[in-house]
Length: 268
Image (cartoon, rainbow, N blue to C red; front, side, top):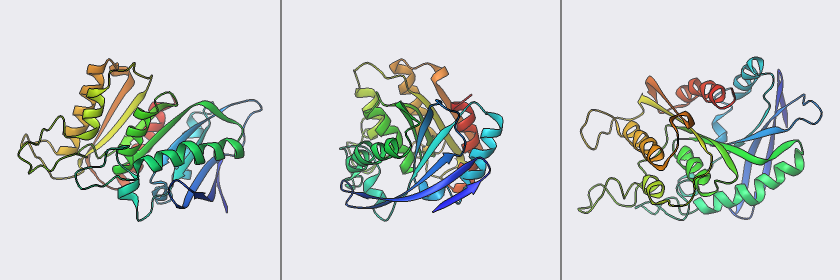
């Protein structure tokens, strides 16, 4: 099925994944006119099922009006009822044993989805890709890029679930630094860093939890701690964009408002 709007089209295709043992619905947002010889960057999006609600075709078309020299192939990966298992941190489930299929999701992208995209759309730049996601899908995108750094460049995280932890808050030996899984992954990395660029969006109404009672909701605290760790690892402040939306919520309208900012930041 093909849907057209202005300069982009959406092609919805089902992929039979052996890694996830299910049919994965995937939406490909493809530029309709590509100058001969021009390479097109790939942007993968977790939770691709919400892009239609976001009216992503209008967002990417409006972006293209401003940036005529930028072409993107955007791939929206639909989640299903197993989302809480397929997203998360690779090989490290949380304390509830959620995220047990995060590695399967990564292998689906690397070994099934991307090869399919290269075959179907030979104009894609095959040197580096970009990835983003929403909420738990944002954590998954960040973690995947961190694990497969040679292949990814720009990373977008909208209301990321950086609270994802290996122990319950009620555990007596809970450590707020070591038991937040993604934060510990970053702090424990000693290898040479890859040239990532990071975009983080948070809404001031993302949630109400404030575990350390400092007057700042946990989602903002967790994201700021991730940014501090990246800076401590040697990333430049020029590599990182933090975008906070006053009264922004943990919902599609807020992420829709932030998406053009992410695109304009990433592809100036």
